[in-house]
Length: 206
Image (cartoon, rainbow, N blue to C red; front, side, top):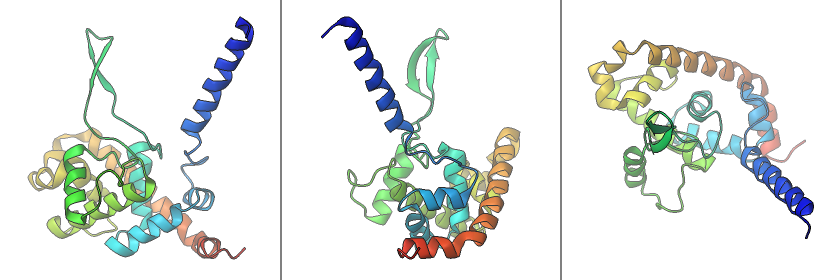
């Protein structure tokens, strides 16, 4: 195989790999209907979370939108040594829900799910994790399950941190929580308009 052919093959492989990496990301992450209609099985996943944990699918989707932008293998950036040498990551958060190791392990214990079969990069597992966490926030902190703003603050700061009000000195976090709240309201309105279509599509009625 000539050098030019090998180079062409390598470029093609990279392009294909890149396509595989980003193929799972919805085309329009700002449109809940587009996301749920075009991503096979996702409507069933968020509906299952809604029924199991009582957390609206619009809240769950808004969390995924702002935590990972719907990237299944999203991870936190690495720290830099001498400003340019990559080192350890800022945190262990990963996957659609950006769940950290400790909280993920707690979720596995409390829900009695199998460790290696349950993955943060699996949309179904990640959305169930978000439902579990927010349901627990609602119970422990007396937050309504459709209050995306307060739920997100608890999600980021932890249950203890929320009780202590650690978010009050973090204006950047409050701004992010407000964006999550805004996205949730948009998603809720969109889902309300296409829920019937989502149901018929899930049942295979076109």
